[in-house]
Image 1 (tube, rainbow, N blue to C red):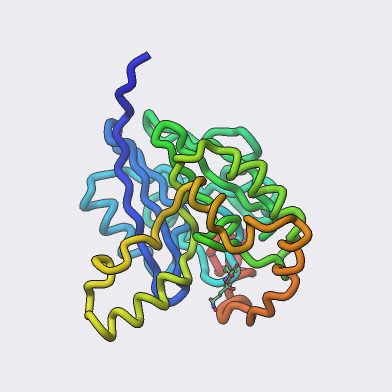
Image 2 (cartoon, rainbow, N blue to C red):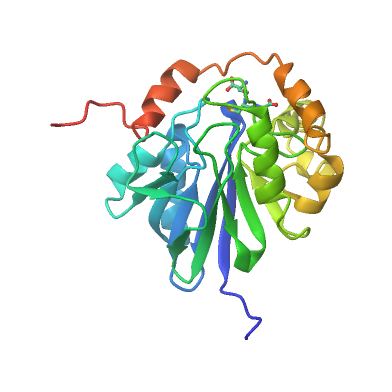
Length: 261
Ligand SMILES: N[C@@H](CCC(=O)N[C@@H](CSS)C(=O)NCC(=O)O)C(=O)O
């Protein structure tokens, strides 16, 4: 078998207000593309980038029903009628394509394997691009942390099992790309004040991690299950600021207008 990989175009995009990462992946040969976790506020940015790169969006995918921002998938579908929305089959929300464990989402010559990783929400799905040894974990696994489990069908016990069986079981060198990074933002603000835009030079690391790194250094998921449950049950985080508008909109693919009958 040839070891030459199908080329991948990968862009990591950031929404500062909610510290959300959106990923643009495209097959370098066919130019078919997917966006993982697009944000409504950033759709114009994403459309411009798709055009600049000359790629064709086939799927707007979400790792789960987000509670902190409205998904851009509905608006992307309006702008690009060939684009279909993708969500986990247990999400309880509207989508064109529902994916379950072990199914593949193909774009060009590449494919994302779907792994069900509930615990933050029921429908949470991790998308694994084996050919390029990377996975997009949504909120199931964050860099050195994980998604909260105190609403939206959250369960620390289920999340612990999901991460250990579906993410930590991947080869150790696989890169992991989360849906948020909150630590990076704190450094970003401090360093912006001190060094303007040179933060990448000083702290180049909070955009990606590996299975090996998280197995060794994740502050929550390296604990025993019992300790993990205790930590998660005592996070006492405030609810996301945009929860009340995000949840109902995301159950409808981010399209808030009434559905025509
Ligand atoms: N302050 C943010 C929301 C922060 C938050 O609750 N993030 C969630 C993921 S979005 S529901 C989370 O799971 N955080 C885990 C953690 O340890 O912080 C806002 O108001 O949008």
